[in-house]
Length: 115
Image (cartoon, rainbow, N blue to C red):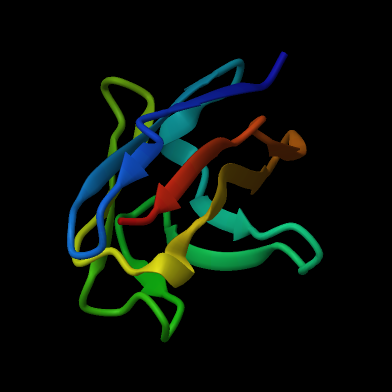
């Protein structure tokens, strides 16, 4: 059974940093591209960053230069390092994969950027 467990969310002041983690299980992690999405109530879920199985990464324009996605295949974990956080980064952040097993979402972790 494919599962994702996100962690690392919380309350942070503008300009601060957080690191999100997504621990995966139930599939061959190293073979699958991983992504982080976020969603604000009333809005569509949007792609924040993605990383291929080979380690190539892509970012939404709104987070380029501030966020970094990384993966540790030995730990079956994908990370999202978020720096210079802004109030508009406030959202629930979700881990997502679309691979040979189909597609699957984590339950999300809330990030609140506020003073």
